Length: 115
Image (cartoon, rainbow, N blue to C red):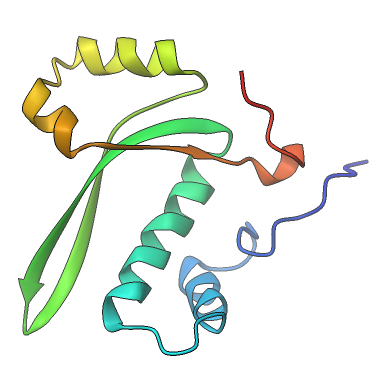
């Protein structure tokens, strides 16, 4: 029996676009780029729960709209393993300056358990 409180934004049975639609109702007047950010955040929550994730966001214009591409460089359960992965991939200082590292809470674990 799982006693963890389910995360309302990460329901494995709901499509990602349905989750994005539901999350967008939390914003009063979102700018168009908000949807792109929410989609990528929810995708990370689905794919990397309980991990540190290193990524780079790139914004491009397509058809008059700005589109977000989030490139995941590495994901690991702790900072030293994340750093080892980045070193093995030879991620240099220029990319590391652009990189964002986020801890993705695991909704199945309840409150975050960090290292």
